[in-house]
Length: 380
Ligand code: XYH
Ligand code: MG
Image (tube, rainbow, N blue to C red; front, side):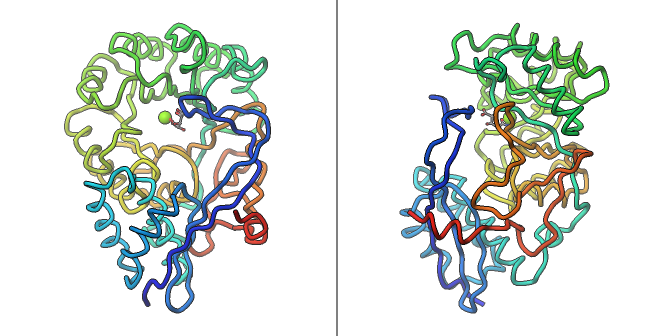
């Protein structure tokens, strides 16, 4: 079996998520958006797909020439070759390209053998408890505009929708008045007051606080018995995180966005820069590196909390011996129905039951139930 083709199709869809100048998503007016479907096809017609942010040029000029003729079961070798190719080509070959290629290959291999990816990785479970992960806070009345709105939404997420845990993304620039340690802590206190002492809560604040601001946040969250805080400072300063971990009993979870794949995360553990490890297929270049990071965390008796939702993260979560505590379901907002199935899918990728458990697909591959009719009708 050899890879015969790698293709990329862009299709349009309607979105209600608008991006601010920093890239954070917020609810907004419905508008046209585009999605990319990467497809890897073998000489005997097997296919793997992934919906990822890759550009046509890198697929045509880098990815396709590297993959055509390769055996898709040698995807560890393919991932390594792409990773080495990044050194002088990072602008054209960012980690998200490795993510898209790696997940399409895992999907293909799963389709060929007729098994879901988590079983190929060595499964440990088929469901994962989810936490509600909010969109970044805003100034929309009744949205996520004040501590009371957070408390109200957290109550709906936990008491009505069944989420077992809740994470706040608080106010960030360019919103006026952001960032604010005091407002962050007020929102966290309001949610703790609304939900009582036993619901696990987490905070993901502004990502560029000073050490003293991050310590003030941590001290406040200690008193509110939060489960973890993530990314309060620039993750390029690993020594700041070493310092913060030494100052507080609050578990610090990271790194999330720091470059360096499994290598950076090994250094964070070695330096004592985190109490819980973090990473997602989008941060580290796919399932292939993320499962290694899960094994690394396990070797140190640490949890790895997977960043972000989606099929790749969900399959890894279902193949972790020291299980990640939660699946990050979101990003959520009172104005958006996250449970509505996107037009390009026939069924959601992370269905959550009333008890707050997300069920991984037990079908072959990644289990994305693509609505190919919709995609074909909306090809750009
Ligand atoms: O929009 O900054 C953001 C969020 O923080 C997002 O990047 C991501 O979902 C995250 O941090 N999850 O924990
Ligand atoms: Mg985060």
